[in-house]
Length: 62
Image: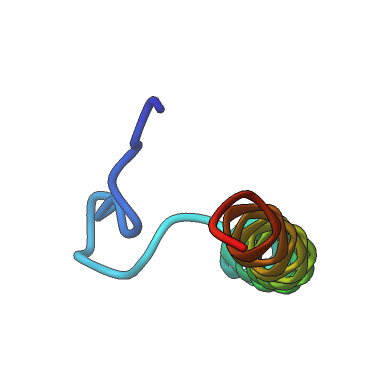
């Protein structure tokens, strides 16, 4: 992942293009939401796989 500096000072030391930074923050916030959703889905899939594995192991051991 390429990371650009969050703030680039201009000739007077103020952040470069506040609108661009605000838009980037919004994009990053959306990416966080998307990744959290994906992680939740993967956690649910992993839990289901673990449950199936437990059930199969129990069947084999009977």
